[in-house]
Picture (tube, one colour):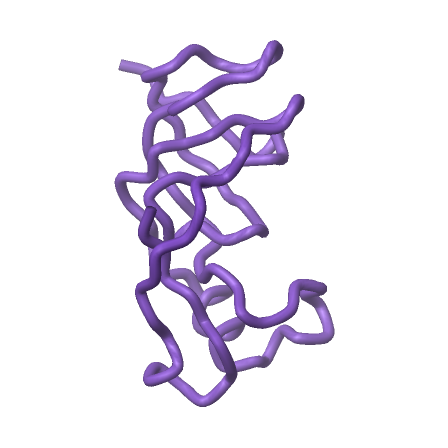
Length: 111
């Protein structure tokens, strides 16, 4: 699976697309096939290292905070496979599949 990884705070040249393992689902989260990711002010500040005191993750890390996509695999409390969702994940969202581990940050898209 491909993901956009930040290895240091030396600007855009330190960002790379790499192959990583597919995340495992958790009991309270859901795996999401990511279709779109916004570039948010949080992402820009995080990439520049301006949020290091607020953010506890260390480098290297997957970039991104927001996402939209469809449920890849659900948990016992979550939506069914194929359900369209939008949300946020502090674990990074610039990847083909993410673990949306905080259910209150995942919202269903009607229609």
